View 1: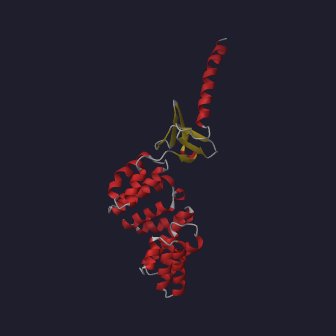
View 2: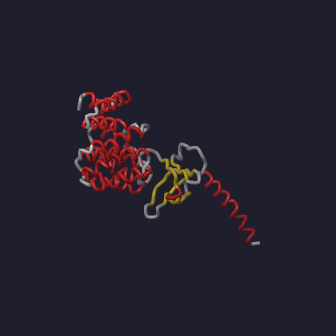
View 3: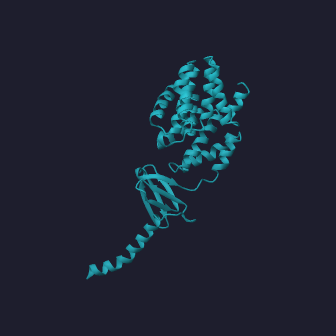
Length: 274
């Protein structure tokens, strides 16, 4: 009899809990439920807040009084609202005022660790630190993001800033090792950036043919879809062909650059004879 009474009392509670948990996984974002996690099994978990606990390697999703802990390994994608101040800080970096953006970007990187927006913030924070002659600071923040996400999950533009920071910090041995790893393990964007960076190092040593074959020209031919790095690859491929006195090939690279990217800074440099 006691068991029957207990079961009757628990039934409403269990039903309420099931409804609440089902709400966490309901597709479609409501205005008051701005965060969601897509798990590797396809399940969508929604909540009013998502945070990351580094010590446990878990994400915490909260909705009302309900809290779910999800292992990092189970998460495929995270969607959280853009941090206040991120766009303004980025605009400051792009507008030539990097120092003013550094405090806000540092805070976003800290508060949004492994919540995706730390990647964007770290990319521009690295650029701002470099512009402020703080290569060590740039390396530190970008290294943390690389360690957290891995090369394969990061965009090429962040990797480009990371490599610039390492070079500015006179860590060229590490740069060469990272380039090999990026080409083998990274995303297409990261691999394209790595090839161009390899070309930069070889060109610096006056190894122009190798810079073409193992860097710039390889990127031009094999990574035509990577538009963010393609102008630089075309520009320096033309430069290397010039150094090798192969002017017809140099002119071909310049024509591709002008036709595909008429307003790019590398196009302007090429047209100015720089």
